[in-house]
Length: 217
Ligand code: ADP
Ligand code: 5GP
Image 1 (spheres, rainbow, N blue to C red):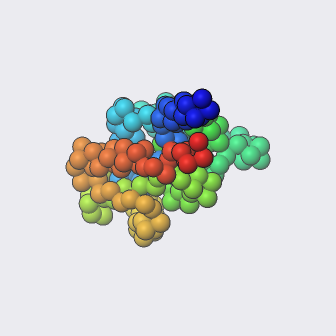
Image 2 (cartoon, rainbow, N blue to C red; image 1 turned 120 degrees about the vertical axis):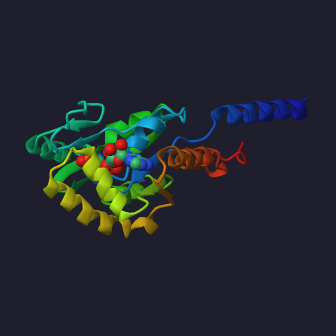
């Protein structure tokens, strides 16, 4: 009796474990300005990867095609400072002369709902997020060449010449930090680069390290 009782309890526990699935995780995408991160983000979110976007706050002016609360929360410097003091950011950094920050609330509520969370942040932010979310997946997007990076920045036509120069100077420093990331993906052809990033996310979600241990059940 007690033998079959304990067997059925174990089966229930295994069934509960099977239903649990993997622990949700953060996916950080970094790379130089103009490499194609926003293009990736848009398509990854539509790819059925149980992935939701963490909308950052920034003091940078809104670009014409951007929407408040979808692309960024656009804050003035005073409000940004107030949010820093309130402890609302997991990390914040000065990037290309503007402030950008990852809101704690954007990540935590999604992980709690069982969603993986996608962040498009710079390398300073990537470092800080790894300290907090040690089991995150960190992907660096590389351009096929520096010339193509400049062409993409100019082709996007959203930044002044001075801003483009600043972003290109910063690109060199950022690319040198690629080895801090778990994966490097070259964005040559957008669709095939996206396939590679999606494959990384799928493989990571199958990792046994992202399931609760079965040994204790
Ligand atoms: P980021 O978010 O990294 O600054 P964007 O996604 O805004 O970069 O891309 C910069 C420009 O490059 C955009 O005009 C985008 O359409 C273009 N782009 C993105 N990926 C590719 C690619 N694989 N080949 C050519 N152009 C690309
Ligand atoms: P853009 O102005 O082109 O949207 O972004 C400029 C840079 O800021 C990109 O490298 C982008 O990844 C980074 N960025 C966007 N949001 C955040 C954030 O919340 N934190 C940090 N550290 N960087 C961010």
